[in-house]
Length: 320
Image (cartoon, rainbow, N blue to C red; front, side, top):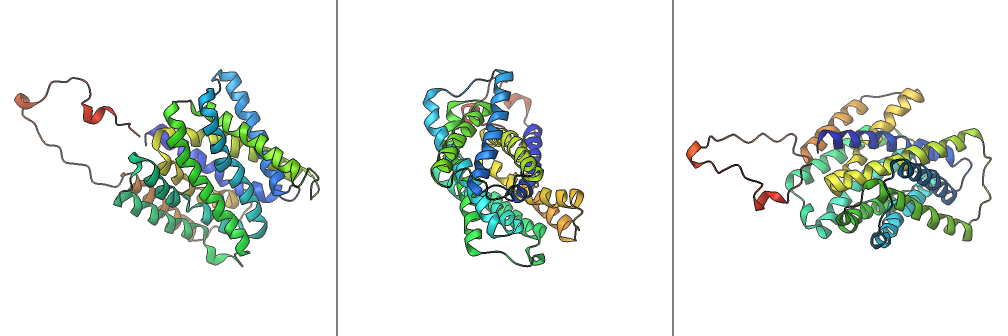
């Protein structure tokens, strides 16, 4: 990835790293479907406002069918399932399960996208990254892991995210639609779908008291961790591919622990910096940053080819 995409990568991890805490607080007042709708509505309003200010426009009609499908797998299903899961399991377990998303994405991308074939280096890096992720969150320090049902809900959310990453790259990226327009369409579609499901299933009576804490958490969750975050994610998928983009899930728990230590004064034990180093090194390995640079070979001037445009073998390659 280039420096701009690395900046997007880290910022996205920071925004998503706060989301588990916001979900926990919001669930004090909202049911999972209501929470999913609320964060989608706020996120959609933020992105549509950005679209209006920048005059980025909306996707063309041919792409809308694919965008609706992407909104189901990338927003409606995972947002609802993670909210359900966090009612019945710990945030630590939810974070570990979400960290498996890059591995699932790698397998799905290998089946669906010809340019996303797995390499030994990438597989090794992703596996080491998952080990580092487990070290960061330190599941041995928790009192319990919650119910199996809650864990399965989080697994379903992680798989749904992986499907959406691959679907976006396979079916929407070829349209060359700006990431901002895709995000606006995706969040708008997901808001309408979730609103209809909520209306005809559980309704709008809140299960808890609507106080400042849950309301503010929902607003930040929607505006930052949903609206802004999905603009960054869709751009990463378009530029770097679904497997690389999904690797952001390895850094999410790292930021979750940092936020907890700074804002909530939670203790930071040895496993946090050790696991963080493992995660970052693993991502560098998967991206080829740790490989030894190839030796330069001097080519005699007489045999050097003329400096024309890119050759057919390199014309289609895209730098990351």
